Amino acid sequence: MDFASLDDFLGRGTELLAKGPVALIFIEDPIEIAATIQHHEKAGFRQILAFTPPDIVLPATGCDVLHKITWDTHAEGALPKAVNAVIGETPETTWLYYCYNAEFLFHPFCENRNIREMIAFHTEERRDAMLSYVVDLYAPDLEKYPDAVSLTEATMDRSGYYALARKDPGNHGHPKDRQLDFFGGLRWRFEEHIPEKRRKIDRIALFRAQKGLQLREDHTFNIEEYNTYTCPWHHNLTAAIASFRTAKALRTNPGSMFDIHSFTWHNSTKFEWHSQQLMDLGLMEPGQWF
Image (tube, rainbow, N blue to C red; front, side, top):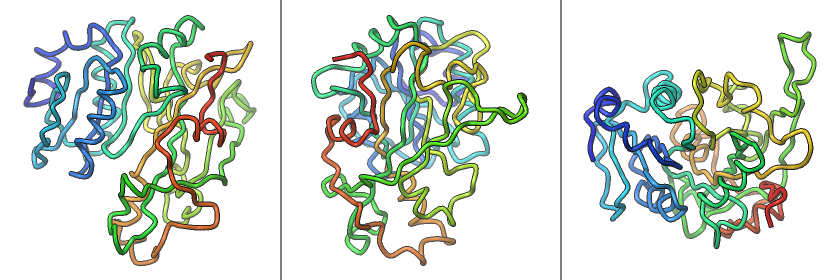
């Protein structure tokens, strides 16, 4: 189905939110749109909503669960505004997920277990949200791939990731319980080109709708338990989003494109498109799910 606007979707398309998980994909440019949609369809999402600017045409994907919503994804606050509008019309039993084009969700054992199986287990552990690390991908040869995107030669950092305590300004700056700010990848190595508030790589990308729930600009939620990486009694599952988004931005932003001639360094490694690599590097946590 195609919807002329977000209001059009909210007026006649909310039945698509009845049963999840539902993926919300925000299209920013024409790069790897089909690959992004097909990846998430294969992952097992029951519906995929593609928020697409009017000047971008969705390519043929063969995806039966794809629905287009015309939306200016470059407008100020476009993503949280759309996500929060969808949350407001979503049953509290439905899980949602959001990402951008040229981003690819991975979860533990995703090669033989789909997203619905993982969410069922996570829900049984009384968790309503899941932390995801955004792992930067980039092409190793920027002359060959000027936009830094190559699915066949995708490269990632194998080290350089770290976490800091997330301070609570409402509690004299003390650390928040079970919350950390995570850093690494291109946002860390090229931090001089990244605004400070955009350097984190953590995102609560998978979550269950709830009355009053609101996504904030920094990819956290107004319900603090949603922002925790684990429950109080043991480690929980986490996911990873393999993303070309930062590499694309650094290659197209006039303030950085002429300063960066390669993203490759001594800790670069070929991305294997497999969950085991991400788990081995500590970028994804299987928790108690074996």
